[in-house]
Image (cartoon, rainbow over all chains, first blue to last red; front, side, top):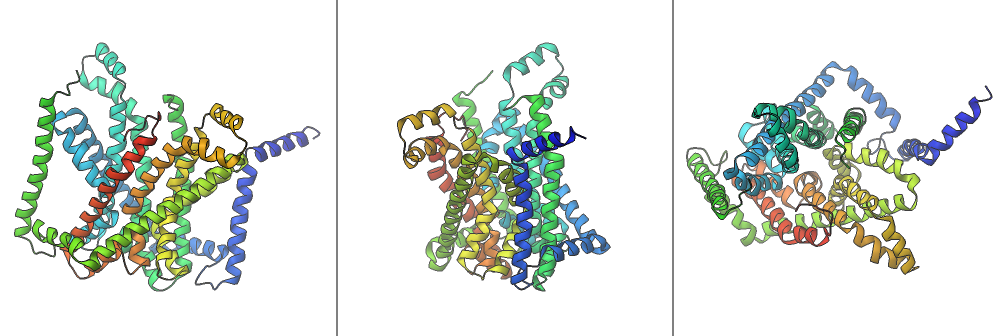
Length: 265
Length: 259
Protein backbone atom coordinates (compact mmCIF):
# COMPACT_ATOMS: atom_id res chain seq x y z
CA UNK A 1 0.00 0.00 0.00
CA UNK A 2 2.75 2.44 0.86
CA UNK A 3 4.50 1.77 -2.42
CA UNK A 4 1.40 2.33 -4.50
CA UNK A 5 1.23 6.03 -4.01
CA UNK A 6 4.68 7.05 -5.26
CA UNK A 7 4.27 4.77 -8.25
CA UNK A 8 0.95 6.33 -9.14
CA UNK A 9 2.51 9.73 -8.62
CA UNK A 10 5.48 9.00 -10.84
CA UNK A 11 3.17 7.58 -13.48
CA UNK A 12 1.16 10.76 -13.31
CA UNK A 13 4.18 13.01 -13.60
CA UNK A 14 5.55 10.94 -16.47
CA UNK A 15 2.34 11.11 -18.43
CA UNK A 16 2.12 14.80 -17.65
CA UNK A 17 5.60 15.49 -18.98
CA UNK A 18 5.14 13.48 -22.17
CA UNK A 19 1.93 15.32 -22.83
CA UNK A 20 -0.53 12.43 -22.52
CA UNK A 21 -2.49 14.11 -19.76
CA UNK A 22 -2.67 17.29 -21.77
CA UNK A 23 -3.90 15.34 -24.79
CA UNK A 24 -6.70 13.79 -22.72
CA UNK A 25 -7.53 17.17 -21.23
CA UNK A 26 -7.72 18.49 -24.77
CA UNK A 27 -10.24 15.80 -25.71
CA UNK A 28 -12.35 16.56 -22.65
CA UNK A 29 -12.11 20.29 -23.30
CA UNK A 30 -13.06 19.83 -26.93
CA UNK A 31 -16.18 17.83 -26.07
CA UNK A 32 -17.07 20.28 -23.31
CA UNK A 33 -16.73 23.20 -25.70
CA UNK A 34 -18.84 21.37 -28.27
CA UNK A 35 -21.52 20.71 -25.64
CA UNK A 36 -21.40 24.27 -24.36
CA UNK A 37 -21.66 25.80 -27.81
CA UNK A 38 -24.49 23.43 -28.75
CA UNK A 39 -26.48 24.88 -25.83
CA UNK A 40 -26.51 28.35 -27.34
CA UNK A 41 -26.91 27.68 -31.07
CA UNK A 42 -29.97 26.01 -32.62
CA UNK A 43 -29.79 22.23 -32.95
CA UNK A 44 -29.98 22.25 -36.73
CA UNK A 45 -26.64 24.10 -36.75
CA UNK A 46 -24.82 22.12 -34.12
CA UNK A 47 -26.38 19.17 -32.28
CA UNK A 48 -24.70 18.39 -28.97
CA UNK A 49 -22.39 15.42 -28.41
CA UNK A 50 -25.04 13.48 -26.49
CA UNK A 51 -27.59 13.61 -29.30
CA UNK A 52 -24.95 12.69 -31.87
CA UNK A 53 -23.78 9.73 -29.79
CA UNK A 54 -27.38 8.53 -29.47
CA UNK A 55 -27.84 8.84 -33.21
CA UNK A 56 -24.66 6.79 -33.83
CA UNK A 57 -26.04 4.03 -31.62
CA UNK A 58 -29.38 3.94 -33.45
CA UNK A 59 -27.45 4.11 -36.72
CA UNK A 60 -25.49 0.99 -35.86
CA UNK A 61 -28.60 -0.74 -34.54
CA UNK A 62 -30.68 -0.07 -37.65
CA UNK A 63 -30.04 -2.97 -40.00
CA UNK A 64 -30.82 -0.95 -43.12
CA UNK A 65 -28.43 1.87 -42.27
CA UNK A 66 -25.82 -0.61 -41.13
CA UNK A 67 -26.09 -2.30 -44.53
CA UNK A 68 -25.23 1.05 -46.18
CA UNK A 69 -22.15 1.21 -44.01
CA UNK A 70 -21.10 -2.25 -45.16
CA UNK A 71 -21.72 -1.15 -48.75
CA UNK A 72 -19.34 1.79 -48.29
CA UNK A 73 -16.79 -0.56 -46.76
CA UNK A 74 -17.21 -2.78 -49.81
CA UNK A 75 -16.67 0.18 -52.19
CA UNK A 76 -13.52 1.21 -50.35
CA UNK A 77 -12.08 -2.31 -50.15
CA UNK A 78 -12.64 -3.10 -53.82
CA UNK A 79 -11.24 0.26 -54.92
CA UNK A 80 -8.13 -0.12 -52.75
CA UNK A 81 -7.54 -3.69 -53.97
CA UNK A 82 -8.00 -2.90 -57.66
CA UNK A 83 -5.92 0.30 -57.44
CA UNK A 84 -3.21 -1.61 -55.59
CA UNK A 85 -2.98 -4.33 -58.25
CA UNK A 86 -3.04 -1.87 -61.17
CA UNK A 87 -0.64 0.53 -59.47
CA UNK A 88 1.86 -2.21 -58.63
CA UNK A 89 1.64 -3.59 -62.16
CA UNK A 90 2.27 -0.16 -63.71
CA UNK A 91 5.13 0.58 -61.33
CA UNK A 92 6.72 -2.81 -62.08
CA UNK A 93 6.28 -2.23 -65.81
CA UNK A 94 8.00 1.14 -65.54
CA UNK A 95 10.86 -0.45 -63.61
CA UNK A 96 11.46 -3.63 -65.59
CA UNK A 97 10.35 -2.76 -69.12
CA UNK A 98 12.62 0.13 -69.86
CA UNK A 99 11.05 1.27 -73.15
CA UNK A 100 7.79 1.94 -71.31
CA UNK A 101 9.43 3.90 -68.51
CA UNK A 102 8.97 7.40 -69.90
CA UNK A 103 5.40 6.61 -70.90
CA UNK A 104 4.49 5.61 -67.35
CA UNK A 105 6.75 7.88 -65.30
CA UNK A 106 6.64 10.90 -67.55
CA UNK A 107 3.16 10.81 -69.03
CA UNK A 108 0.68 8.51 -67.32
CA UNK A 109 1.53 9.07 -63.65
CA UNK A 110 1.69 12.89 -63.84
CA UNK A 111 -1.58 12.88 -65.77
CA UNK A 112 -3.38 10.65 -63.28
CA UNK A 113 -1.81 12.55 -60.41
CA UNK A 114 -3.08 15.88 -61.72
CA UNK A 115 -6.57 14.60 -62.52
CA UNK A 116 -9.22 15.87 -60.16
CA UNK A 117 -11.21 13.43 -58.05
CA UNK A 118 -14.41 15.26 -58.93
CA UNK A 119 -13.45 15.00 -62.58
CA UNK A 120 -13.28 11.21 -62.41
CA UNK A 121 -16.50 11.15 -60.48
CA UNK A 122 -18.43 13.23 -62.98
CA UNK A 123 -16.98 11.33 -65.94
CA UNK A 124 -17.91 7.97 -64.46
CA UNK A 125 -21.39 9.32 -63.73
CA UNK A 126 -21.71 10.19 -67.42
CA UNK A 127 -20.49 6.77 -68.47
CA UNK A 128 -21.98 4.37 -65.95
CA UNK A 129 -24.91 6.20 -64.36
CA UNK A 130 -25.55 6.14 -60.62
CA UNK A 131 -24.48 2.86 -59.06
CA UNK A 132 -21.75 1.11 -57.13
CA UNK A 133 -19.59 0.68 -60.20
CA UNK A 134 -19.42 4.45 -60.68
CA UNK A 135 -18.26 4.91 -57.10
CA UNK A 136 -15.64 2.15 -57.31
CA UNK A 137 -14.39 3.36 -60.68
CA UNK A 138 -13.93 6.94 -59.49
CA UNK A 139 -12.24 6.00 -56.21
CA UNK A 140 -9.97 3.47 -57.94
CA UNK A 141 -8.72 6.00 -60.47
CA UNK A 142 -8.01 8.49 -57.70
CA UNK A 143 -6.00 5.92 -55.76
CA UNK A 144 -3.92 4.55 -58.67
CA UNK A 145 -1.37 7.42 -58.84
CA UNK A 146 -0.80 7.24 -55.06
CA UNK A 147 0.00 3.54 -55.39
CA UNK A 148 2.25 3.99 -58.44
CA UNK A 149 4.25 6.75 -56.76
CA UNK A 150 4.81 4.78 -53.55
CA UNK A 151 5.72 1.49 -55.22
CA UNK A 152 7.89 3.26 -57.76
CA UNK A 153 9.83 4.96 -54.95
CA UNK A 154 10.37 1.54 -53.39
CA UNK A 155 11.61 0.00 -56.61
CA UNK A 156 13.99 2.90 -57.14
CA UNK A 157 15.40 2.57 -53.66
CA UNK A 158 15.97 -1.17 -53.98
CA UNK A 159 19.49 -1.58 -52.81
CA UNK A 160 21.66 -2.56 -55.78
CA UNK A 161 24.13 -4.52 -53.67
CA UNK A 162 21.44 -6.63 -52.08
CA UNK A 163 20.02 -7.58 -55.48
CA UNK A 164 23.54 -8.51 -56.57
CA UNK A 165 23.91 -10.63 -53.45
CA UNK A 166 20.60 -12.29 -54.19
CA UNK A 167 21.74 -13.08 -57.67
CA UNK A 168 24.90 -14.67 -56.38
CA UNK A 169 22.92 -16.80 -53.94
CA UNK A 170 20.28 -18.08 -56.29
CA UNK A 171 19.85 -18.07 -59.99
CA UNK A 172 16.11 -18.48 -59.90
CA UNK A 173 14.45 -15.11 -60.57
CA UNK A 174 11.36 -16.27 -58.67
CA UNK A 175 13.44 -16.99 -55.59
CA UNK A 176 15.15 -13.61 -55.86
CA UNK A 177 11.78 -11.95 -56.16
CA UNK A 178 10.15 -13.69 -53.19
CA UNK A 179 13.20 -13.69 -50.91
CA UNK A 180 14.76 -10.32 -51.66
CA UNK A 181 12.74 -7.91 -53.76
CA UNK A 182 9.31 -8.29 -52.19
CA UNK A 183 10.57 -8.17 -48.58
CA UNK A 184 12.52 -5.02 -49.44
CA UNK A 185 9.40 -3.50 -50.97
CA UNK A 186 7.14 -4.28 -48.01
CA UNK A 187 7.48 -0.85 -46.33
CA UNK A 188 6.57 0.88 -49.59
CA UNK A 189 3.67 -1.43 -50.33
CA UNK A 190 2.44 -0.78 -46.82
CA UNK A 191 2.80 2.96 -47.27
CA UNK A 192 0.80 2.68 -50.48
CA UNK A 193 -2.02 0.83 -48.71
CA UNK A 194 -2.01 3.18 -45.74
CA UNK A 195 -2.16 6.19 -48.04
CA UNK A 196 -4.92 4.62 -50.12
CA UNK A 197 -6.97 3.86 -47.03
CA UNK A 198 -6.83 7.48 -45.88
CA UNK A 199 -7.55 8.99 -49.27
CA UNK A 200 -10.29 6.49 -50.15
CA UNK A 201 -12.37 7.39 -47.09
CA UNK A 202 -11.90 11.05 -47.88
CA UNK A 203 -13.32 10.66 -51.38
CA UNK A 204 -15.70 7.70 -51.17
CA UNK A 205 -18.37 9.73 -49.37
CA UNK A 206 -18.18 12.41 -52.07
CA UNK A 207 -18.46 9.76 -54.75
CA UNK A 208 -21.45 8.11 -53.09
CA UNK A 209 -23.10 11.43 -52.42
CA UNK A 210 -23.10 12.45 -56.08
CA UNK A 211 -22.78 9.24 -58.02
CA UNK A 212 -24.01 6.47 -55.79
CA UNK A 213 -27.27 4.71 -55.18
CA UNK A 214 -26.16 3.43 -51.79
CA UNK A 215 -23.54 3.73 -49.11
CA UNK A 216 -22.96 6.16 -46.28
CA UNK A 217 -22.45 9.06 -48.69
CA UNK A 218 -25.92 8.39 -50.10
CA UNK A 219 -27.38 8.58 -46.58
CA UNK A 220 -25.43 11.78 -46.07
CA UNK A 221 -27.05 13.25 -49.15
CA UNK A 222 -30.56 12.38 -47.93
CA UNK A 223 -29.78 13.86 -44.53
CA UNK A 224 -28.43 16.98 -46.20
CA UNK A 225 -31.57 17.49 -48.24
CA UNK A 226 -33.73 17.08 -45.14
CA UNK A 227 -31.49 19.37 -43.07
CA UNK A 228 -31.10 16.42 -40.70
CA UNK A 229 -27.97 17.76 -39.01
CA UNK A 230 -28.05 15.04 -36.35
CA UNK A 231 -27.59 12.34 -38.95
CA UNK A 232 -24.94 14.36 -40.79
CA UNK A 233 -22.99 14.73 -37.57
CA UNK A 234 -23.49 11.10 -36.61
CA UNK A 235 -22.17 9.89 -39.96
CA UNK A 236 -19.19 12.22 -39.92
CA UNK A 237 -18.37 11.36 -36.31
CA UNK A 238 -18.66 7.66 -36.98
CA UNK A 239 -16.43 7.74 -40.08
CA UNK A 240 -13.96 9.89 -38.16
CA UNK A 241 -13.80 7.40 -35.29
CA UNK A 242 -13.60 4.45 -37.65
CA UNK A 243 -10.69 5.88 -39.68
CA UNK A 244 -8.87 7.13 -36.58
CA UNK A 245 -9.38 3.76 -34.91
CA UNK A 246 -7.98 1.89 -37.92
CA UNK A 247 -5.02 4.26 -37.94
CA UNK A 248 -4.25 3.84 -34.24
CA UNK A 249 -5.01 0.13 -33.89
CA UNK A 250 -3.92 -1.19 -37.26
CA UNK A 251 -1.62 1.07 -39.26
CA UNK A 252 0.55 2.69 -36.60
CA UNK A 253 1.56 -0.57 -34.87
CA UNK A 254 2.41 -2.15 -38.23
CA UNK A 255 4.37 0.96 -39.17
CA UNK A 256 6.33 0.80 -35.91
CA UNK A 257 7.03 -2.87 -36.50
CA UNK A 258 8.22 -2.17 -40.05
CA UNK A 259 10.37 0.75 -38.91
CA UNK A 260 12.03 -1.53 -36.38
CA UNK A 261 12.65 -4.45 -38.71
CA UNK A 262 13.74 -2.35 -41.67
CA UNK A 263 15.60 0.28 -39.71
CA UNK A 264 14.41 3.22 -41.72
CA UNK A 265 14.66 6.59 -40.10
CA UNK B 1 24.06 -2.55 -66.31
CA UNK B 2 22.66 0.93 -66.46
CA UNK B 3 22.31 2.22 -69.96
CA UNK B 4 20.98 5.69 -70.26
CA UNK B 5 22.34 5.90 -73.77
CA UNK B 6 20.59 8.26 -76.11
CA UNK B 7 19.32 5.28 -78.11
CA UNK B 8 17.17 3.91 -75.32
CA UNK B 9 15.99 7.44 -74.46
CA UNK B 10 14.78 7.92 -78.03
CA UNK B 11 12.90 4.61 -77.93
CA UNK B 12 11.23 5.66 -74.69
CA UNK B 13 10.31 9.02 -76.13
CA UNK B 14 8.84 7.49 -79.28
CA UNK B 15 6.78 5.03 -77.24
CA UNK B 16 5.62 7.68 -74.76
CA UNK B 17 4.56 10.23 -77.35
CA UNK B 18 3.36 7.57 -79.77
CA UNK B 19 1.06 6.22 -77.07
CA UNK B 20 -0.48 9.67 -76.57
CA UNK B 21 -1.14 9.97 -80.30
CA UNK B 22 -2.64 6.46 -80.29
CA UNK B 23 -4.89 7.33 -77.36
CA UNK B 24 -6.09 10.45 -79.16
CA UNK B 25 -6.82 8.47 -82.34
CA UNK B 26 -8.60 5.74 -80.40
CA UNK B 27 -10.61 8.38 -78.54
CA UNK B 28 -11.57 10.06 -81.82
CA UNK B 29 -12.55 6.74 -83.43
CA UNK B 30 -14.60 5.61 -80.41
CA UNK B 31 -16.32 8.96 -80.03
CA UNK B 32 -17.52 8.88 -83.64
CA UNK B 33 -19.82 5.97 -82.84
CA UNK B 34 -21.05 7.26 -79.52
CA UNK B 35 -23.49 10.05 -78.70
CA UNK B 36 -21.69 13.26 -77.64
CA UNK B 37 -23.18 13.24 -74.15
CA UNK B 38 -21.42 9.92 -73.44
CA UNK B 39 -18.10 10.52 -75.12
CA UNK B 40 -17.46 13.79 -76.92
CA UNK B 41 -14.73 13.68 -79.53
CA UNK B 42 -11.36 15.36 -79.00
CA UNK B 43 -12.29 18.24 -81.27
CA UNK B 44 -15.46 19.05 -79.29
CA UNK B 45 -13.47 18.94 -76.05
CA UNK B 46 -10.79 21.15 -77.59
CA UNK B 47 -13.48 23.64 -78.53
CA UNK B 48 -14.79 23.67 -74.97
CA UNK B 49 -11.27 24.08 -73.68
CA UNK B 50 -10.78 27.02 -76.01
CA UNK B 51 -13.66 28.71 -74.21
CA UNK B 52 -11.38 29.00 -71.20
CA UNK B 53 -9.40 31.50 -73.26
CA UNK B 54 -12.10 33.13 -75.36
CA UNK B 55 -15.14 33.16 -73.06
CA UNK B 56 -14.68 35.69 -70.30
CA UNK B 57 -17.15 34.10 -67.89
CA UNK B 58 -15.59 30.64 -68.18
CA UNK B 59 -12.08 32.03 -67.83
CA UNK B 60 -13.19 33.98 -64.78
CA UNK B 61 -14.41 30.79 -63.10
CA UNK B 62 -11.05 29.10 -63.65
CA UNK B 63 -9.27 32.14 -62.27
CA UNK B 64 -11.52 32.23 -59.21
CA UNK B 65 -10.77 28.57 -58.48
CA UNK B 66 -7.05 29.18 -58.81
CA UNK B 67 -7.17 32.18 -56.48
CA UNK B 68 -9.17 30.19 -53.91
CA UNK B 69 -6.77 27.26 -54.02
CA UNK B 70 -3.77 29.55 -53.63
CA UNK B 71 -5.41 31.40 -50.73
CA UNK B 72 -6.48 28.22 -48.92
CA UNK B 73 -3.05 26.62 -49.22
CA UNK B 74 -1.44 29.81 -47.89
CA UNK B 75 -3.83 30.06 -44.95
CA UNK B 76 -3.37 26.37 -44.12
CA UNK B 77 0.42 26.66 -44.29
CA UNK B 78 0.48 29.71 -42.00
CA UNK B 79 -1.77 27.91 -39.50
CA UNK B 80 0.40 24.79 -39.70
CA UNK B 81 3.51 26.87 -39.15
CA UNK B 82 1.95 28.51 -36.10
CA UNK B 83 0.99 25.10 -34.68
CA UNK B 84 4.47 23.70 -35.33
CA UNK B 85 6.06 26.75 -33.69
CA UNK B 86 3.83 26.30 -30.66
CA UNK B 87 4.87 22.65 -30.41
CA UNK B 88 8.51 23.65 -30.68
CA UNK B 89 8.15 26.28 -27.98
CA UNK B 90 6.24 23.90 -25.68
CA UNK B 91 7.08 20.26 -26.52
CA UNK B 92 4.42 19.13 -24.07
CA UNK B 93 1.86 20.04 -26.74
CA UNK B 94 3.31 17.47 -29.11
CA UNK B 95 1.05 14.62 -28.02
CA UNK B 96 -2.03 16.83 -28.26
CA UNK B 97 -1.17 17.97 -31.78
CA UNK B 98 -0.07 14.60 -33.12
CA UNK B 99 -2.48 12.28 -31.39
CA UNK B 100 -5.56 14.48 -31.27
CA UNK B 101 -5.63 17.39 -33.71
CA UNK B 102 -3.79 15.63 -36.52
CA UNK B 103 -5.76 12.39 -36.29
CA UNK B 104 -8.99 14.35 -36.07
CA UNK B 105 -8.24 16.42 -39.17
CA UNK B 106 -6.82 13.46 -41.07
CA UNK B 107 -9.83 11.25 -40.46
CA UNK B 108 -12.44 13.89 -41.16
CA UNK B 109 -14.23 13.08 -44.43
CA UNK B 110 -13.75 15.96 -46.87
CA UNK B 111 -17.38 16.04 -47.92
CA UNK B 112 -18.22 16.42 -44.22
CA UNK B 113 -16.39 19.75 -44.13
CA UNK B 114 -18.20 20.75 -47.32
CA UNK B 115 -21.64 20.02 -45.90
CA UNK B 116 -20.91 21.54 -42.49
CA UNK B 117 -19.34 24.60 -44.10
CA UNK B 118 -22.57 25.27 -45.96
CA UNK B 119 -24.73 24.54 -42.89
CA UNK B 120 -22.71 26.88 -40.69
CA UNK B 121 -21.91 29.67 -43.11
CA UNK B 122 -23.67 30.81 -46.21
CA UNK B 123 -22.73 29.97 -49.77
CA UNK B 124 -19.79 32.31 -50.28
CA UNK B 125 -16.09 32.48 -50.98
CA UNK B 126 -15.09 32.48 -47.27
CA UNK B 127 -17.06 29.21 -46.92
CA UNK B 128 -15.06 27.68 -49.77
CA UNK B 129 -11.83 28.88 -48.18
CA UNK B 130 -12.88 27.38 -44.84
CA UNK B 131 -13.65 24.00 -46.43
CA UNK B 132 -10.47 23.87 -48.48
CA UNK B 133 -8.28 25.01 -45.61
CA UNK B 134 -9.78 22.37 -43.31
CA UNK B 135 -9.13 19.66 -45.89
CA UNK B 136 -5.49 20.52 -46.64
CA UNK B 137 -4.49 21.57 -43.11
CA UNK B 138 -3.43 18.09 -41.89
CA UNK B 139 -1.04 17.69 -44.83
CA UNK B 140 0.54 21.05 -44.00
CA UNK B 141 0.83 20.21 -40.29
CA UNK B 142 2.58 16.90 -40.99
CA UNK B 143 5.22 18.63 -43.07
CA UNK B 144 5.67 21.62 -40.78
CA UNK B 145 6.17 19.31 -37.78
CA UNK B 146 8.65 17.20 -39.74
CA UNK B 147 10.56 20.34 -40.67
CA UNK B 148 11.00 21.48 -37.08
CA UNK B 149 11.90 17.96 -35.98
CA UNK B 150 14.75 17.87 -38.46
CA UNK B 151 16.33 21.14 -37.35
CA UNK B 152 19.89 20.54 -36.33
CA UNK B 153 20.15 21.68 -32.67
CA UNK B 154 23.72 22.88 -33.32
CA UNK B 155 22.55 25.28 -35.98
CA UNK B 156 19.89 26.59 -33.63
CA UNK B 157 22.57 27.13 -31.03
CA UNK B 158 24.66 28.95 -33.58
CA UNK B 159 21.69 31.19 -34.26
CA UNK B 160 21.37 31.91 -30.55
CA UNK B 161 24.99 33.00 -30.40
CA UNK B 162 24.59 35.28 -33.39
CA UNK B 163 21.60 37.34 -32.42
CA UNK B 164 19.35 37.80 -29.47
CA UNK B 165 16.33 38.95 -31.43
CA UNK B 166 13.93 36.01 -31.74
CA UNK B 167 12.34 37.55 -34.84
CA UNK B 168 15.67 37.84 -36.62
CA UNK B 169 16.56 34.32 -35.58
CA UNK B 170 13.25 33.04 -36.91
CA UNK B 171 13.72 34.62 -40.31
CA UNK B 172 17.46 34.03 -40.66
CA UNK B 173 17.90 30.59 -39.14
CA UNK B 174 14.67 28.72 -38.42
CA UNK B 175 12.72 29.54 -41.54
CA UNK B 176 15.49 28.65 -44.03
CA UNK B 177 16.02 25.35 -42.18
CA UNK B 178 12.37 24.30 -42.34
CA UNK B 179 11.78 25.79 -45.80
CA UNK B 180 12.35 22.51 -47.71
CA UNK B 181 9.66 20.82 -45.64
CA UNK B 182 7.31 23.74 -45.99
CA UNK B 183 7.73 23.70 -49.76
CA UNK B 184 7.13 19.95 -49.82
CA UNK B 185 4.03 20.52 -47.72
CA UNK B 186 2.81 23.27 -50.04
CA UNK B 187 3.24 20.97 -53.03
CA UNK B 188 1.24 18.18 -51.43
CA UNK B 189 -1.44 20.56 -50.17
CA UNK B 190 -1.69 22.27 -53.55
CA UNK B 191 -2.25 18.92 -55.26
CA UNK B 192 -4.83 17.77 -52.70
CA UNK B 193 -6.60 21.10 -52.96
CA UNK B 194 -7.09 20.77 -56.72
CA UNK B 195 -7.89 17.09 -56.57
CA UNK B 196 -10.08 16.68 -53.52
CA UNK B 197 -10.85 20.04 -51.97
CA UNK B 198 -12.51 21.27 -55.15
CA UNK B 199 -15.57 19.49 -53.76
CA UNK B 200 -16.07 22.68 -51.76
CA UNK B 201 -17.12 24.48 -54.92
CA UNK B 202 -19.81 21.90 -55.64
CA UNK B 203 -21.57 22.90 -52.43
CA UNK B 204 -20.37 26.23 -51.24
CA UNK B 205 -20.02 28.41 -54.30
CA UNK B 206 -21.76 29.78 -57.32
CA UNK B 207 -18.50 30.30 -59.19
CA UNK B 208 -15.30 28.40 -59.88
CA UNK B 209 -14.35 25.25 -61.76
CA UNK B 210 -16.30 22.99 -59.40
CA UNK B 211 -19.42 25.03 -60.05
CA UNK B 212 -18.73 24.91 -63.79
CA UNK B 213 -18.35 21.12 -63.62
CA UNK B 214 -21.61 20.82 -61.73
CA UNK B 215 -23.43 23.01 -64.23
CA UNK B 216 -22.02 21.10 -67.21
CA UNK B 217 -22.97 17.81 -65.57
CA UNK B 218 -26.58 18.80 -65.00
CA UNK B 219 -26.81 20.13 -68.59
CA UNK B 220 -25.30 16.84 -69.89
CA UNK B 221 -22.59 18.92 -71.54
CA UNK B 222 -20.00 16.15 -71.54
CA UNK B 223 -17.55 18.15 -73.63
CA UNK B 224 -17.47 20.81 -70.91
CA UNK B 225 -17.01 18.18 -68.18
CA UNK B 226 -14.02 16.80 -70.09
CA UNK B 227 -12.71 20.29 -70.72
CA UNK B 228 -12.91 21.23 -67.02
CA UNK B 229 -11.04 18.05 -66.05
CA UNK B 230 -8.31 18.70 -68.59
CA UNK B 231 -8.06 22.38 -67.67
CA UNK B 232 -7.47 21.33 -64.05
CA UNK B 233 -4.73 18.96 -65.24
CA UNK B 234 -3.18 21.77 -67.29
CA UNK B 235 -3.34 24.37 -64.49
CA UNK B 236 -1.91 21.93 -61.95
CA UNK B 237 0.87 20.69 -64.23
CA UNK B 238 1.91 24.15 -65.43
CA UNK B 239 2.01 25.69 -61.95
CA UNK B 240 3.81 22.65 -60.58
CA UNK B 241 6.51 22.85 -63.25
CA UNK B 242 6.89 26.61 -63.33
CA UNK B 243 6.48 27.43 -59.66
CA UNK B 244 6.56 24.58 -57.19
CA UNK B 245 9.29 22.39 -58.68
CA UNK B 246 11.79 25.25 -59.02
CA UNK B 247 10.88 26.26 -55.48
CA UNK B 248 11.44 22.71 -54.25
CA UNK B 249 14.74 22.49 -56.12
CA UNK B 250 15.88 25.79 -54.65
CA UNK B 251 15.12 24.79 -51.08
CA UNK B 252 16.06 21.13 -51.12
CA UNK B 253 19.62 22.01 -49.99
CA UNK B 254 20.62 18.54 -48.87
CA UNK B 255 17.36 16.94 -47.93
CA UNK B 256 17.62 14.52 -50.83
CA UNK B 257 14.10 15.04 -52.01
CA UNK B 258 13.46 13.92 -55.52
CA UNK B 259 11.54 16.39 -57.52
